[in-house]
Length: 378
Ligand code: PMP
Image (cartoon, rainbow, N blue to C red; front, side):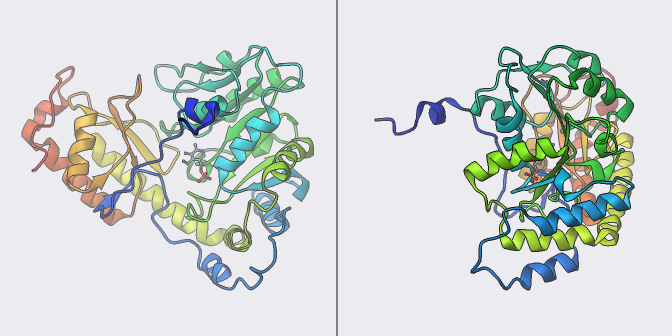
């Protein structure tokens, strides 16, 4: 007897990055390598009111987001902010709240063919028909593909796993096309590490929802706090879904900690600067080793090597206790995604990588010459 519902049996869930028991270096889930703000840690420990339900409106976090936005020149009110249990939670609610809008049931949701692998998972879970728009040959999102009848648009900017940022002027035509028709969700999980936020477009586009997370920029992946910025009508749509599922989804500790982290702007800027410096150093070193490194506006690097089989490379690294991410998917089969860790972690990674490439010497960088990592024990 099958106890699952047809729905549970029929879906393909998202696959999180591996969590080996004792990794030497784990740089496979784009976590921040530095600790969260001391203010955030103090707030987490100072929590007194666990007896009580958390604020279903997460007002302290929303106010902290409003202040942080104000500091960047974006004027918003608490009515423009929605807080969820991680941005995956917020994205999940977007699918239920906005896709497809009333009257657009025959049109597909549009997502990039290479992007965050949760987007099609949500679509399948919630029964939203979707179509994938191919990235161009340089892995950029092509705006023209989204200028057609749709039930909504979701993409990440900067994109993952490519790391590539799409300038705002290229996003505007999509927002203009969808205005009064459908919601455009811009997932800015990595915006702290590069690019200008689409939040600057919110006053022009009531159909834009910007989704962010504290998991990467604020080193709080384990806390599970994400948020959305948008027109009050969109915020109300998300609230209607949340209050129909789990009104207290963001717990008390999470709210106190997140608000303190958001207020500590200087700390966040400091750890971000360190990550960017490490990213550039590692990218340079990888290029010297013959890798093609896609231009990253994120806290990870997406890299390929013409002469090396990426899966074998991934396996060779894992054998040595170094965990990066490999996606067995069309077009990106020969890439690995490497999160930017501390300088020490990246040195261990680079050293191991260099040893894996040694048997091939200069051959590894020769064009069109397919070679394989053989000596994974080296
Ligand atoms: N969007 C993108 C593009 C991501 O890479 C991630 C992290 N896996 C998320 C959203 C979700 O982040 P979280 O749920 O931790 O806020």
